[in-house]
Length: 372
Image (cartoon, rainbow, N blue to C red; front, side, top):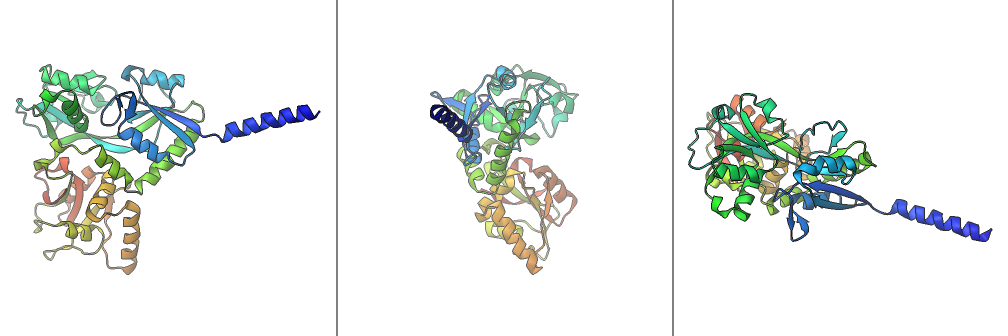
């Protein structure tokens, strides 16, 4: 009897330990440096560092592995991996997919050779030309008049561009720069990033709703991502992995532009003046009250902006604004969804000032400060 009780107690203890041991979360990513790449058998890159931070303290042991582009969907469906890290997209025939909150948002640009001399203002200027692109992003639906040549990876598009198989392809300039600097040094200086951006895309983790404990794992990941947005760490990781492309900056002056309407009497601001405007400490200069336009919490540019101009996290900015509004002396910023919406607001309302992705700058607005 005692032997049976001891055996039951041992089994119960083992089961209890198994339940309390940290579970593993295995994610796959296609080889896209600097986001994810294999470095002598070790997976490195922005995805790994970001997800390690997001899952810190969650109880999950996180592992990221590099997967072939053509096998990602099959590996997810078979349960070999818990999720795929990459651009948010719809996988054909996969109705059970569920996505995390955005990790960050990237810009999709038209990339051309420096010898093509294209006159580019929008995708309409590319009609009649074959355009290289990554498959699965729904570009053929958004731009039905464009002739696309779809491939599975950016490297193939870059090589086709240089071999003059086509004159333009669409890609994140960060990936193109990394490929040119590390694998194809002869291509450096031979390609050009066209502005403005074609689109902004979310990077997410796609999981299988039918997988084991999927919702629990996704909830843990989303909690970590929400917490990470309140800290300077996200902006630090973006800087560490150089996720702002110099080639897409007008004049190579900065990744974020503070802009006003061209009719504004304001011509130039310094860092302290920009910080004062967006933190409610002043309402403008030149006798004109300016309405600040802020980005939503979901846009990573917001965190980077306040970290650079005032060394404040988003949560610290919110606390400061709460005090300013209580005093009744500050003009609260209008919040918009994206840099494109902020740009449109400045164009439509001359009394507005906004910070936007520097790649969107055009003659529709006047830049009064570049965030270095």
